[in-house]
Image (cartoon, rainbow, N blue to C red; front, top):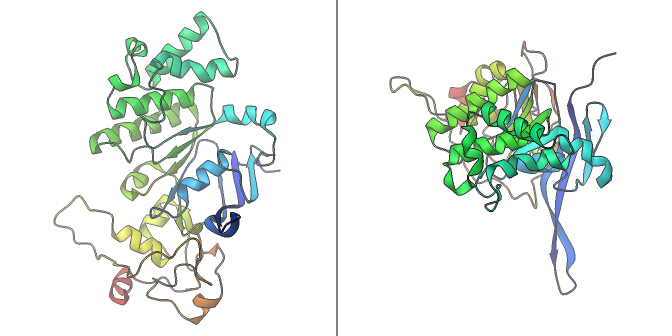
Length: 338
């Protein structure tokens, strides 16, 4: 019998109701996340990428139960957790933690660093007294902050240092999975690299699993093991890092990769410009949701929604794509067609 994955998400949906009229009736829904499925193994990083508004952060918050899910299942280490009542969620809360995008707004400005890191340890009854102090000091060392900094307040730190405090707080209860929701997008380039290297080192040391939500594919390529590409609430392609960056199948994935800057002025990249705007998640188009912007769309794309299937002609195991095309389009052809 195979070992269950640390996290298994099955057909996850989160629809936000819209209210209107004199009686405040439900007039429609925002289909922010509409049938997302993936798994994460222990010690693995899965990156969730896509344009702003595609539903990446909604997926992370739904897993954490910060949003009640509309439908679907979430399993943690072989146990279903999406339907658990509040008291039974406490063990899950300890194992799954989050690092948010803005480190300043996610830290209590009235608490010293020591109290911020101590809060989850005390909340779960993991340590007290001198043992608590030792644990906090150890966490400060792990995130590479001086121990005397624990007496300071969040406003006394830089953005990168605040994010290190958030990482220490996420590690404090002994978590197995950390959801990084755009955890480096608000930081300077050099600081981004430091935080990414820190996360990578902590993963190697502690065996952490990471769900890394980002729109920065250059960062994703450096950190991740597998990548899931989202568009308008759905995953359109999922593959290991090497396969996705060298042999993407879906036209949307190819367009995203063509926009990644190359740090060599002598290298020219064929840029794919997608025309039109992203459709509204309130009224997504029928069939393939990308067909309104896809240069290769045909009649089937407009009427039949593609499901995730093994990518045609891909040698990689686990490379799946939601596209009716059997032939992988060449980047130059995509750019020309677009």
